[in-house]
Length: 436
Ligand code: ADP
Image 1: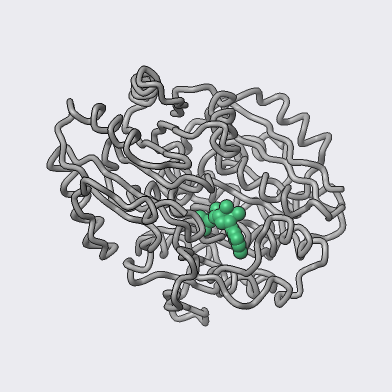
Image 2 (image 1 turned 90 degrees about the vertical axis):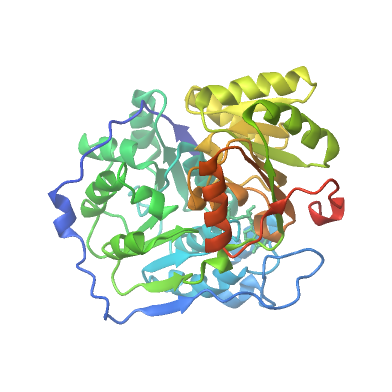
């Protein structure tokens, strides 16, 4: 039986400046032979409100190990999703991949299954390294490895990220000797720099939510980690949003990659998701939110706010109205953040008020309503937040409270870029439209 992933924590890392190690990245030649597929929209009629675009093929068609097929069956996965169908073969062959695909369509399983399929006999060296942009996402990815390694004996996964005791983390790495390491960039760089972790045996490097990791605050850490891994390795990067600038940056880390890119951004729209807005003054929002929660049927709700303190304040206000709520933001300790993550993940908490800590990457299967209590600052953030509902093609509702001119501008941008009509919220919404 594979050992379970161990969680270790750290203090917040200082942001590092980008340095000359960037020169050691691949000078990507745009004309280099790369397989470029634009993700094709699944045109087949959706089955019973399922908008995932699954394939008729089964996971057994990929010739995965029996142990993995058994674990996949235990997870209840019947058919691979479109992105899995498209990327798994090359991922398993060791090809570098840059993959952009809609939220909630199973990108995680692409790299977890591919790396587990190729995992060598356990030798105590880090062979698979996964970088994620937030601690919660790192934790979630390690949990996914645990799900899929249920019947494997050679997998030892450890997850490290910031927020709590660092000494424990060093100790854990020394005693557990993981061959799969999931980490946030700042902490990993720190551990690497002081020799607590050796990355010289890495064979597969995965960057999840890559456009976020390639952003200004984490790119230097990523680059430093990258150049401390062997030159000959597979690199896979995943995201739902990838600007031209980020595509170019990402390609510097890849050699002859399979490119699965979405050039037509309307293809990022989740078709199971109903999207509405409410034009409202700031003072009236709380009352309207209460009315929404009283009037709609929800499995789970994520309510997004802009400021850390607002999460707690709004949570307290909803509690006064007898709603059972939890709040998360970076103001909380890492233990509290993780506890809240787990409460939401396991359905113990049904209404969570969050800053963008839960804005992308995290997978809460039963969320069917997302509310932008505060509008996000840009269209990409909107797309990620809305994608917390409607996971894997399920139905959902995204409601945005539009208060300022800036909010209106973001909403206009969302509609223009993703070619989606966000209508004013009607008096009555048919529950079958947003509830499975
Ligand atoms: P993404 O990374 O694309 O946003 P995730 O990897 O988080 O999406 O997957 C979203 C959800 O879909 C998860 O709950 C995951 O367990 C589920 N899932 C992934 N692949 C399948 C599949 N083939 N069949 C059913 N559920 C799946």
